[in-house]
Structure formats: structure tokens, C-alpha cells
Image 1: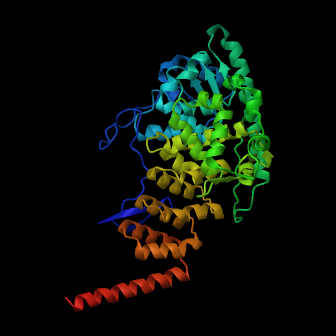
Image 2: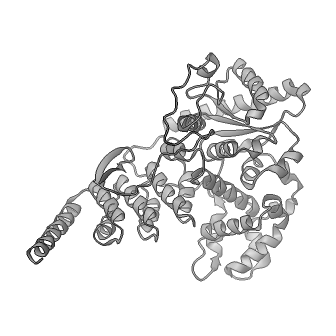
Length: 477
């Protein structure tokens, strides 16, 4: 039996039967049967046709809020802003979800209509997470009082929406006033992005130059950042700088991780409680920080690494704000690349369109996620960003030693796609020695993609030896 490996992340290479990491999804907003072909879509209404293709802005909303969405969309288009929106004319199923994911990636701006219905919608949450890690600038719109909405949100929405200034559309009588304020922000952002795009095109790197990725957690619309629920936090807590936090609590240039965590959770107890209702989520955050602060097997945190974690674009950030930003980024990436995410496939297939240092760094982190499926998806996704810097390649090399065979397969294919010559020796070893045939086959595909004299000679010698051994077996039944 033979099946096609997804070689070069697009073309196919025939290889012995193997369980390849799937980059297709059967998720849908409706329960469309997996084995049935969807009926041909009806001819779209004029309203639907206007909503297709790359637009300035996408609106994410719950269908319970359709009347408001239509009114908002009409006003935006009257003012020269093109809008993509999911409306009834689109068919349910995979194609439907792909169009939504594509619209998020292509749109410059993203409006999240926040209501008691939308905060419970898995699709609205997934769309928000993808918008957060893509290049979209996010504009939350509240249809109800924030005090009533905030307790209904899960941790992901709290983290992702709390950092932005919300537009208040609670009072219908104040619609025009609220819209004028929103429109001014949208147009200002579109103008800024146009200037940024022009600047980038004038200073673009040579295509042959190897990219070196640098962590940068800043968001496009950071100037609109608002305190919102952070207003109730004690200023002297959220604004503590990393050096002061350390000097006030620890006397050496290193500290046991458990002591650091204890000091951290006591200092920011109020903030933690506001964000996390489940103790497991606090533990998740500590695990993220453990990884990000590069704590070793000795469970010792070094000051210089801790300080480096708090640097963004060479500027030292307040400790809690840096931690909150890291949690926000990590949570969004986790939600987008979770196997149950409705936008995962589109995110994987389109990462190259909005790759950024933050996305690539987050994918590095996901390569060590406890969930093997997430690690496998992260390896494939990282390859799609074309990230061939040393850090990315070293992270992918480690997947070849993963205990899960699907992760090893994904690692092989990712390294092959990136033509990682430094992986040849390990791939040759796996091709000859891995106990799982599927992994050996993935290594063979990767080696064929990388090519070169070393690969040709090693594969030739191995095949000759295998043939001689087989012949010896046949001669001595």
C-alpha cells in the first residue's frame, strides 16, 4: 500500500504507507457528515458577494447579534471601509471555515462584537485567537456592560480582550456617537498600517539573506491599549520593575524556582485571581514561565535570564505586564493550534502570510507542549513559516528524539521541507534505526528533499547492504 506524503508542504512524494500528520480538517459550524459531499452552494445573494475576498476589516460575531452586525457593517461601508463578514449565504462545512480563517488572515482590522452570546461561542473564541496571533489589529465592541461580560469569559478571551480599548455600544440611543469614535480609530489604524507597509517595502531584506528572528511581543494597535479591568489593580504592583522585584526578595543572582513562584504568586495574587478561576490555569502559566525563563534540571532560575525574559525590543518591561503579555501570546497560540480549533488548518496553511517573531517564538514553545498532537502540528507549522534560523532548526532537531512517533514524523518532514543540511546525520540514523517504519519512511522523504553527496552515498551504501542481506537470507532459507 502506498500513500502520498505532503512533501514540500504542497507537492506529494509517493512513499510506503504511513500515518502522516493531517493538514485537513473536518470541523464545521454545522454537523456536516464527514463522508458526504456537501451540496453545491446556492448562488450567493448580492450581500454575500460583497463580503468575499480580502477586505480592510472582518467582523466576528454571534448570530444572536446579527441585527447589530448588519447595522454596523452598513455604516462602515458607507464610510469607505470594506468589510468581510460571515453571513447566511456561506455554506457550512470545511470550505465555510476556511473562508473565515482566510478572511481573518487577509483583513487588516478585526472587530470582535462582544456579548453574552459571543463569549460562549467556540467559533468566536477561535477567530479572536487567530486574529491575535496574525497581523490583524483588534477592536472589541461591547453590546452589554463589561462588568457583566467579563465574568462569562474564559481565560483566553480575558487575556486577549483586556489589553485593548473597548468601544461601548450598550446604549442604542448613543450609536452614532459611539460609531464616530470607533470610525476615527479604524481610519487612524488603516492609515498607520499603510505607512508601515510602505516602510517595510522600502527596507525589505534580500531574499537570499538568512532571517534571524527576534522575540517581539508588541501588538500593532498597542497605542489603543486600555486599562479596563486592570484599573482595579494596585499600580505599585503592576508597575514593579524586574530588578526591584528581585532585589527586594532575593539576595543572590539565582534562586530556587519554587521560591520564585511563591514570591510571584503572593505579589500578584489579585491579578492571578482576576485572570484565572481554575488553579490548573495558574499552574499552566507557571509552566510557561518555567520554559520561557529557561530553568534547568536543577530548578534554579538565573537573574540574567530572568531579566532577559523581561526585555522586549531591548526595553525592560514591568514584570506583571511582561508576564501577562506572555500568557496572552501563549494562550492564543495554544487555542489556534489545538486539534479542536476551528481555524487550525487555515492557520497552518497560511502562516507564511503573517509570520512574525512572536508567532515563530510561540511555535518554538509549542514544540515542548505536553500534548503530542500539538507538538506535531507545531513542527509542521514552523516549517511553513520557512524559519531556517539556527534556533528554529535546533528546536526541530530535538523533535527527532521525541517519544511520540507522530512528532518524529512531523519533525522529519519539517526539516526536509526546510532543506536542513545539518539534520542529515540524524535523519540518516533515523532512516536506518528508528523502530517505527512510518518514521523511517518520513526520514527517507526528508533526505530526498535535502539531497547532496553525503545523502546519496549513505543511502546507496545502506541499500546495497540491505540487498546483500536480503540475498543472503534467500540463499539460506
